[in-house]
Length: 522
Image: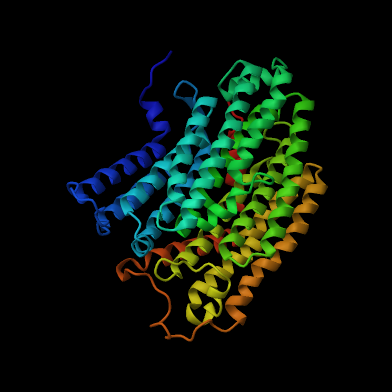
């Protein structure tokens, strides 16, 4: 077997930077704690240290630089074929790194307010993000499963970081148990696909499937179980039961990180597995898989949007909204499968599957910004969570209200925001693939979503504040004024990104088309 060389290390530079940064943060945090105390009572947490936050944010920034430096790299196989690097994995890895950078930059004041260990938090975020980047680059069953389980363990712990809050621990436990079940389904599915093809690398599997050499009696059940496993990770209906409780129970900043990074990593892996393995395979296999995903997509869109209407918690509303957006992404996946030949372009000039890539960046900015606003508006250890807690926000915090308005309008798909173009391209690709039914379901459920998104806007702008300004010493603020600007800066960046992409969507669409094409280049 060939050895590992310098080119293999270069191929995973973003993930290596994140891993090394996470380990460095742990070591620095260990030394600043000092020797353990011999006392029955647990020692108080060490004070927040700016070096830890700078190391974490600096590591995420350097990983972003590594992603940008590799955008022009030609597609290639590394680590004995277990890793494949192309524009697709670079772009989606870049979205994961962006979510990580925004999370580490927003964390200082929030962690201090909640009494969360900053060293542990940043280490888990960085190590989990590194595994997510590797998941986006995975080209074999082994690297896919190991990467997925590595980042899952980090996210389980992050969910239960506030150990003194019952619902946080409950959410972490639910996530752990259901995540373990989903991993079992996924592992069994991968084993069946391996048995059907006799290969562990996706490119070699695809060649066997396209040549008709795979055992279809094992291939279809294996593909179905893989879809079930990823359905759990994405929160697609009917595998979504864990997601609202986990999103509500986790610290809001962790929820923001999960909504961006976890979904992007899971969609990257599912898109690679589905399109590379099955889009050029036997027609009956592709048609069956397409039909199953189509049913999941419609059910997920309907359930997510209907359930979001009745929520009194903004976090739960956004959680169900995230389920609905998973349904939209699955519509794009069905369209990509339906369009046939790899890299085929639709009549509208959109490369099959490019709408999925285009959709992820606006969605990441919208959801992250909304959750961070809820985190900033909290007081003490309580985050702003209910609709009532945002009443009259335009009077108390007009800039934050404006940012939330941008995010809600974009999530609703109202022009000229980035969310509008994301849905337009997605549904147009479905129409080009002949899936008018899916496009119609997506449009109808998007209309339903306008109600609960604009409900929050009405609460912020058209209802009086829940308490007079100054009744509690002024508007809510972060505990540490020296870091109070980091969270709003991340929100400003996200809001500006939504506006810029909404005004100039062509550049991102072109890059999305190029990235999906590189997924099939030798």
